[in-house]
Image (cartoon, rainbow, N blue to C red; front, side):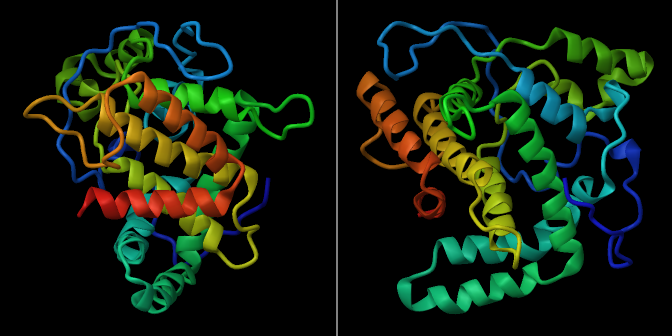
Length: 296
């Protein structure tokens, strides 16, 4: 893991009393209310038999470092905890502008995005978060038989996360309550602690923007395997989410018109996600295109 030097342009140390707001500050979508029932789903792959819901361990660990560190006695890195405070105002709008650009606008808009990425504080926040995610992905989805990463295992977890069927996390909810039982009801994380899912549908594209922008940083490796895998997950997950969790009167978001609530879509999305996972440029292009569709 790289050593990221402290930079005086970084904000002051993160206020731990704001635990849990890292991802919520830039979530401009309404909360989707859904149950957290554990169930079995059929995940399209080599076999047609139903596959049990995968483990939530990846998201438990990720959230323990980014939103619930006080529940698990973790000491997070201030640089990635500042991620959306530093990165969001600087690059989210330019990334969205690039994703929706016409061919004639693309060069100018990418230059504007890269100008924001040249800010040392932005680069440090992105790289610190990237280091965390790379380690967690390598730990939870190690490759076998020559593969660097277990892309299929990652996509299984992303699908369950996107469709809100990962097992409820009563342990995390209990840990949160134990921090301050008297003020538990006032903790904004209470509404989310039981479930591992994407509450705000626009967050798929915040995640994609973060990964895409990290890959655009000068001298930092571009679309490395773990970044391509995450971008494929954002494209796959957002489409699964918007297709299978939308309900009459409560749409999650707009995705490609050919996707429907059927087995054919499950198989098509899984096939496409496998291709994106090993082709970072295709994954990046799809994530940007899906954002454009979502706001069209």
